[in-house]
Amino acid sequence: MDEGFDGHGLAYHPERVAGWLATRTTTGPIYTEVELWPACTCRCSFCGVDHLVGSHSDRLDAAQWRRVLDDLADAGNRSVMFAGHGESLLHPDAAAVIGHASGRMRTSVTTNGLAFEAAGAELIDLLAWIRFSINAGDAATYAAVHGTAPDRFEVAVRAVAAAAKRKRRHGLSVVVGVQLVLLDENLAGAVALARIARDAGADYFSVKPYSQHPRSGNRLSPDYSGAAALERQLAPLSTDRFRVVFRAGTFARLGAPRPYSTCLATPFMSFVDARGDVWGCPVFAGDPAFRVGNAVATRFPDLWSGPGRAAVQARVESLDATACREACRLDPSNRYLARLLDARPEDAFL
Ligand code: SF4
Ligand code: SF4
Image (cartoon, rainbow, N blue to C red; front, side, top):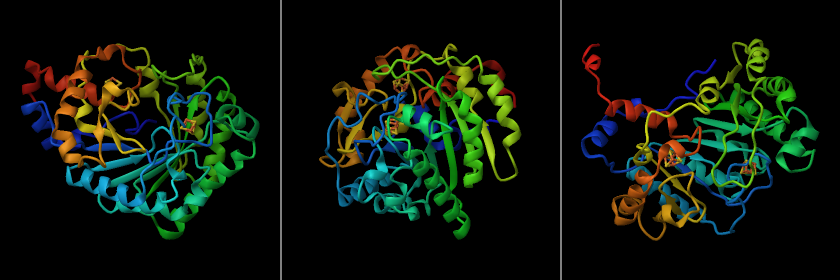
């Protein structure tokens, strides 16, 4: 079962894509990833951004975030995922900031869950979805994989249960999920974790592959020869209220040739870090060559149309995208846009 987890949303923004096809630029992103907090209480063995987590302690206050988020919405941004190079729920005003964004745009949160209860379960009320990153089926493996204490496993599971309980009690539409990045260390516990997620009341449990970040300190080469067997073991756990989502499309794309050599999709997305810095590519965030500017110092629409972003965009387009991060978030969007540019005679037929 996959059900769109490996897809993209560009097909639902035809007017924005048509504008890009005509001009090769956009007046603003559709989707933005926002990092509220630059540090994390975990030290995950697979963390793709281990070179950035905790690299500084600067952060914006709630009033600054409200303005940045309003500017994003005014620029036509439709959705925000709170994630980034740290744990966004550690921000003391996380619930208020997320609630403000939810009043203007579709919102979601990716979290390790350890700060969820302190942040306030009500932060899920207006979200489209929340995804808890839990990467082991038992406390000892959790401690080893997440680089934290074994008792944090129970805290993470409790957070899922709290979110699911609030969803059901208040009839919320938020989708509550648990995600596992498949590693050699956690493969044996994946089925146990799926059962734990189901019993906690989650709506789904997803399994995705590790993807090497070009700049991360960790260098892992998980053995996925057992992945197909795991998919078969997980499938029967789905019920009418709980789905197992084995991200087969993402597994299949690992190592597969990419039908584009230039990244095309960055005009549709942005990344704003805990300082308010805006980056032209989320993967190369932290590299000054990809820094567009600061969304507190300069209003977002001006940043987007300014010379800084034009220079960064030119840099992105000069990269050999076939050498970019495998399973980059924008890979499905890039495939879609590359196909649109590759018009074929048969496309004239419905
Ligand atoms: S919880 Fe996320 S940001 Fe924190 S160390 Fe783990 S993977 Fe990195
Ligand atoms: S394809 Fe490359 S340039 Fe484009 S978003 Fe992914 S990592 Fe960045």
